[in-house]
Image 1: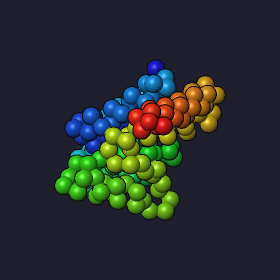
Image 2: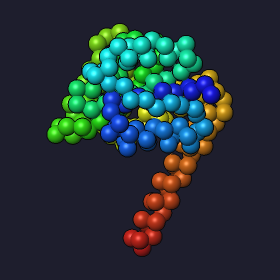
Image 3: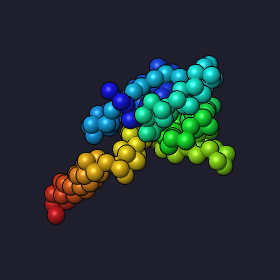
Length: 167
């Protein structure tokens, strides 16, 4: 199978959070792969992975890392594919260090950065689907239905709240 999205994490300890990306992609029927690659421990493997991703048919790369969080930037430096960075809370700074490291890319090396942790990982999956949806009508339609379901869910929660309040 030709995976469209690569989900990469700096350590296997990041899997619990990065699984959120995988779950979103599964829900939308998007093929993906997952790998552990470290910008610090295996820098040549990261560069090689990024350089070959496009020829392997990948369309989007999602990279999650904590601490110094150089993974997304190291990947973006070696590919023209869109890279989405997910900062992870791996240190006593609760992900703030990873957020700054991921979002502060130099001009010319863009990394789309989402929130820290599971909400960010989920949004990274959704952003990847939105990118793919630009050229895939099926995904675009699924996204429209997903957004509608979010609105319906919110309205239902408000209705229940109003009933609790006696209104």
